[in-house]
Image (cartoon, rainbow, N blue to C red; front, side, top):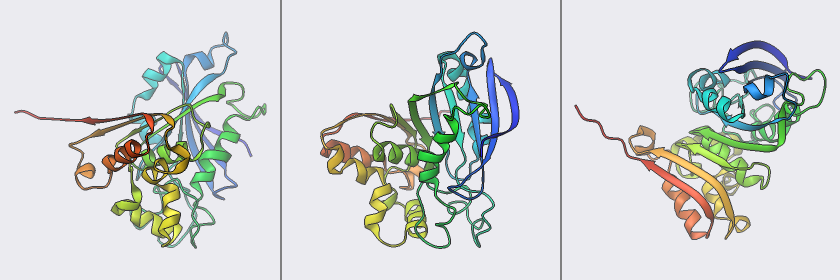
Length: 275
């Protein structure tokens, strides 16, 4: 089933589309927002534009960054389309899915759950890497995005839980994304409280299974040793979650160095305040 257009909003010379579709992967309706830059909506342009997928963090929906992040101003300037998927299925009616901010609704962690009762619906890894691209790049005349997006020029980024998702999807799918960037990502979820809670709930207690969704473990693996990535991580040292040990970018950076991986830049933003 194709997209239903819920709203079309003029935005920085382009269009912000609020879309919905019925997902076979999550077995629920899924919301997604897409920004088309001026180059993609001009009647004079026939070339598809590159795409940046933005994965949001805990508690977020497709509306958070699309309405508050102002990425569109830069995307319009550079002719890039933006895609904001949701952070989890909605309305799966699983007992307890709305009980906490860091597990269940709005906290899908971009994994495919293997544990009941989550495995029927909470398949965000497959949704983001397979079903959603299939819908976005479909040439169907019923697709409002048909011919506008370049399936061969796709990069991925994200924030916090979404930064975790961006890093792991990039590392697990070599060649699928041109580059990866992440703002304050959960970089080593197997070793932090957020990740331990989510992974034990969605994936069970086998910590070897956790490693397949942990960027620090993935970049340390044989597949990436000595390889070149196109990756940027940006973390503010004043971030309370950084101070609490939820993000652990140092662990990722250490694994990169030990594996001889190149092309990774980790920036620590020092913020000071004066009266």
